[in-house]
Image 1 (cartoon, rainbow, N blue to C red):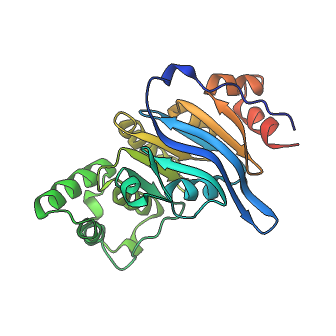
Image 2: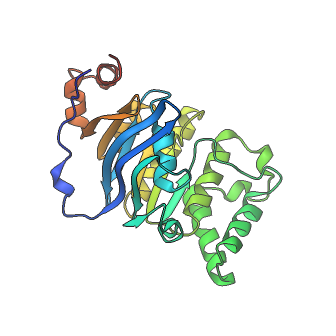
Length: 253
């Protein structure tokens, strides 16, 4: 398969890179989950990270966050090497993995208080930040309910609130709309638009309509390699005007 990747959009080159993948590879024996993945997300961008199931998206995101070590290459968040200086990098990072772990016996309030204490927040800061993330994620109606009793949509919001709690300037979100109904997806889209005004976001999704509605740029991966890095308009051209066709053309041999 030929590489149809256009050059990345040059309009944001003045902004500093906040998420950097440099030659990231992850090998499990002879199998390469990711191979030589290279791209960056600059300050203020919302970049959609696309690819079919098993393409290496989640593996790449886990390497970027320092959750797993790359076999080769370097991951940086806000300039910090995530293998050498993960704690400093994590101060800038909010990470929401797919089906992110929650404590089902806790309420959203007790979980947020727990994470605030774990981060060493003062009593005043903890109160302020919890109030703000509850407002951003629209959790006020479920704050005292057990997380196990919440809908999939509210559980996603709780996970998002935890990722936002320490006011990071970088967000890496793996399939935040997975399993949500259309109204819940609309709510996530509105939240992303608000957050993108002040944060740098890498967002993994399978919903191409969401890409067009939210993303400044698209990075697409297939079989562990980057096959596209550019804007939505140029991606549409590859599919003769159709994003579904562009996705198919870039991810099939």
